[in-house]
Length: 85
Ligand SMILES: [Zn+2]
Image (cartoon, rainbow, N blue to C red):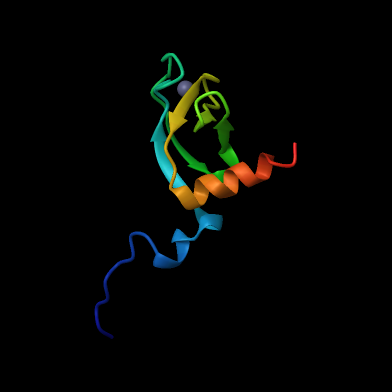
């Protein structure tokens, strides 16, 4: 059997439903105060911030908010979760 390349990130996982990003809790854009935890967030963990028109996640350890930038396609899907409110 031939040796094959190891898949670091599957091209199939790049669709929106499988969006996952490794981030550090820094409190960036939200007044600082992050604890430095390294987290893996997906779409369900990211919330739109209406006052900045950006996005943020909440750290499960220190409960601080950190701003996060997401691809336009993901941004649209996250916003659509909240449009019905
Ligand atoms: Zn934290």
